[in-house]
Structure formats: structure tokens, C-alpha cells
Length: 326
Ligand code: ES4
Ligand code: ZN
Image 1 (cartoon, rainbow, N blue to C red):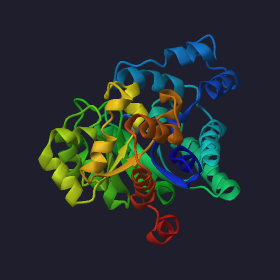
Image 2: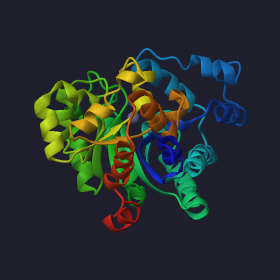
Image 3: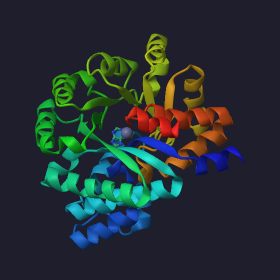
């Protein structure tokens, strides 16, 4: 079996996926029409053309605009179910899915509408496709900590459905330390803390995510490579990084996939996983992300097997379930 055939077929886990970032233009148009919400594009082709980004903020502006059409529980169900259908096609058997409640509650959509739609899709995916999933409630870091506290409060009736809290959106100028108190409060409620750090922001933000937010996993983390002391610590602590290759090139954090650091990160002993981030916007679901790295970086079968193994090992599945996949 070739490495490409192997990665297409093997059971995989995805640990870094924004459900709002899996919103395909076709579904966006369909939901916009049924909800009678105007979108600033003529047709699906025009949306796809708009998906050219100079940086993270360029992308986020379009991502929040797309999410505007999501109003009803069924919309969140359809969005989530569409992602699970991709999982079934690619043999993604476990997904840890981020959702941004504030992207919706800021527009007047109830927290309950968002979570109930997502939850119903999770249950159907488990029942009909055997796909397990966990939810990561992500705070938007361009908003205030007080705002995040409000979201934490709204989540409490649904605590049993949410496993982790995360931190996403505009990284530069919004360091992890801005959210120290709300992360402490979230951990007290039983949530496991993770955070985006070192995607566009400096290595210093990764230190903060570790020391101040006490995260159990780093989302992205690429910029650790500028700080050898930090790399040493991440390796020593077996701290997983959820790396997103096609996201990095789409947002110009890496100029060319041939220069993507994922192989170097493996060589350094970092606990790397491969993920898709926002596949509808960055033109590639999980398998595409693996294939792009395999081809551009000439990854060996052993390296690919290690990446797949890491995706289960550094998931938050219970140990006895993980063992079935490793
Ligand atoms: C995101 Cl790529 C990325 N970075 C930070 N926040 C995000 N939210 C959705 N995608
Ligand atoms: Zn992300």
C-alpha cells in the first residue's frame, strides 16, 4: 500500500476543527435562502473567489460574515452533520470540535439554539456512522474577558455536553493572560483548557498559555520554533500541538507547503498532530492536509503512522477507548 492509500483508509482523529469553518458555500447559500438572509455574494463561485486571505484577520472577517446566516437549531444541525459526512468519507472516527458561541449570541441567537443543533448532529453521527466527538467551547479573544465570563455562565446548563474550553480569533494583541480569570473559573467548572497560541502571535504567548492558562494542549504552536527553551519544555512535558498545514499556507503564516515545519517539529520530538482548522475556507479536509504534507515534505510511512497515532494519543478520549485505536 502506498502512503497516500494508507492515509486515506486508516482510522484517524481530528483535534482542531472549527465547526463554523466547515461551512461550505453551497450550504451557506441554501441556509441564507431559507432564512431569507442576504449575503454579499452573487453565487457560490463568487464566495469561493473571496476566499483569498492575506492574514488571519482577513479570514476572520469573512468567517464571521458567513456565520451570519445561521439562525435556527436546524441550521447548526445541518452545518455539523455536513462535517460528520466528510468524517465518514475520510474514516475520521473521532473529532474534537470547536464552536464559538459568541459568534452567534452576539447576533441574538440563543446559546441553547447553537448547542442543541450541534448536539443532535453529534448523537446522529455516533448512532449512524459510529463517529465519536467532543466539544470545545472557544472564547473569542478579541472580545473582553467579561464577555467570556458571560459565555461561561450561559454554558453551565450544558456542561455535561462540553469537554473543553478554548481560545480563538485574533491572536496578536490579545495574549492568553487576558483570559486568566475566566480560564480559572472554567477549570473549576470541570472544563479542560486548551488555547490557540503561536499561530500568528509570538512564542511568548505559548509560554503564557502554559503558565497562565495551564492548557492541556496547544492549538497551532508553530512559533515555538523561534525559542529553543520553549521547544525543550514542550518536548519534556509531551505537550501536544494541533498543527494545521493548509490553514498555515492559506493565511500566509507559512509561505509554501514545501516549507511547512511539521516534519522539523517531528524531528525535534514535539507531539504534533495534523488537522484541518477551517476546511471549507482553506480548501482541504483532514486527508488533504496529510496528503499535502506527504507530497511536499516527503514524509515516510513511519512519520505518517506517528502522526495518526498522536491524533488518538493526544485526544481527550478516555484511556480505555484510546487503546482501541492505538
Ligand atoms: C481560526 Cl485559523 C484560526 N485562528 C484563530 N481563530 C480561529 N477561528 C477560526 N479559525
Ligand atoms: Zn483554529
